[in-house]
Image 1 (cartoon, rainbow, N blue to C red):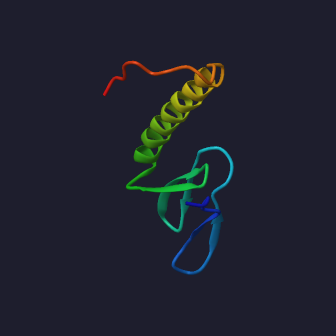
Image 2 (image 1 turned 90 degrees about the vertical axis):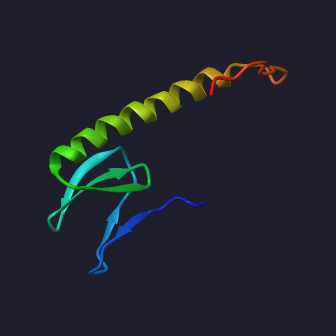
Length: 82
């Protein structure tokens, strides 16, 4: 699936989704936007909570990718947590 470049609103306004995660209020609706994703939230506080969760999740994926980069091609996973 390709990257989603914009959030297209009902009035055909396009909001860019590139860049880091951020909170925006658009026409009375709160969103967490960034990294080609858009999440609608019930309130500014809900958006702040979601933003914190998104940063933690994004950081975990980045750390895992960095850790896996250094492994040799012959590395074999022998156990995996569920």
